[in-house]
Length: 278
Image: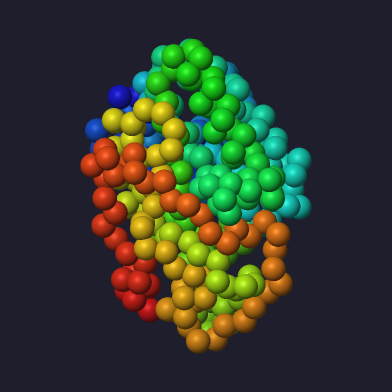
């Protein structure tokens, strides 16, 4: 197949490129806001451009993954215009391109849509834009008979995770701080829970969803939840606390029934991963 991965130079996108390049023709489209050239996979064709400009390339793909959106919850509070420009503006052109390609679209939604009894989607520009886009994808594709599936990630961790800077993720950041003998800072209260899911399990689920899934609510989550306090304590005893942030969700409902029904099952667990890194 000819496959287009929007966000293919990022953490999850690069692993997806790596999985598909073995037997397919893969192109990555990325504006490198969070993607990195060091994540490039041999054999993949890389386009450095904004997703909103996607209509300028040939619609020649059978499968399109859209993972290329701004993905920081708390930091999005200070970047409303930037988040909407990068998340909300491109979506219609991506859908037009999918239709012109006669392709199947796999959209990476956000589990913040289901957090705190569904109220979290109004607490940050990131959560709102992801909720809005998932609804637009569903509406557009169902009205024009475009095959699609919407997946929902739950705190993905593993190789190529960002440990520093704006796009640092919890596990990589904590492990990096531990390796430099620095304090691990937790946003209060620390009792907020997450379902950390390994990158290998996430990519495996995406491949299965792309092959068999149709429609909405394909959650990709390890069923074991950890509080952020528990995660930090698995790594270090040198722990501090930061003030609460209104965008920081406390818990999130996991919707994995449809993904599990396709034959997917998570194989890797956070405590084992952390132990291997210490």
